[in-house]
Image: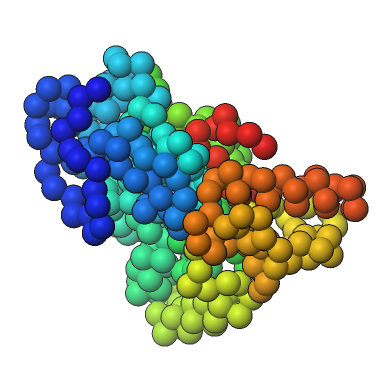
Length: 321
């Protein structure tokens, strides 16, 4: 293995990579044995064999070609919410997109958004432009690319309602554009979940209404306050763990009525504030999280006949559960 960067310790400052050897075609920084827990909201996960921060589309293609030539798997990581990374880490190359693909541009009745743009930043810019309908994004700690893949939502709204088009890089090194109807967004799902090797690089949204920025800012503050009252704040969580069943009570209520609210397994604990959130109370492992999720699913199925489906994405995809 060709290591050219030591494992970061403490506060990490990204430095330009050594542009030599197998990485000569990659402009962005690349690290070996990078601790992925530091890049996830759960603070869980082993090291990436290589972590790459692509600077542009050319870097994305170069990293795809390199991974294919070496037989390495390729993983995608945004801001690390709604994801559980194995304790053993990720082999091959992990593309970290939260520091790149930051386009945010209004064009007529649409807004073009790079895949790495943080959702709170997108919500703020939309509000500054007086574009309504995106306020619900302010409290979601993800990136636009990952959010489109999962059709992220809150407060009865989701991105699929405003999505017009996405651009994806495919494993055969094509840049494809897909319409919203081709993506078939649904409740916390889209066609992209069945295509984990397709990388979203840019998105396009259509805005529904214009209003005063002050009115939008006020609505954003109301939604954020509601979120803080209902959900655990300033704790290491990944967001909602399970989807709400299509028929019946929401997942949090089922988990609470099954007796799991506040219970722990290892370092993982079901939130006492909202039972559909699991907290890393310190030292939790991916194994702890999987074991707790499995126990909750089994308990809810036994008591209520409902099989909870997780929202959390596991990396690598062949983790148990």
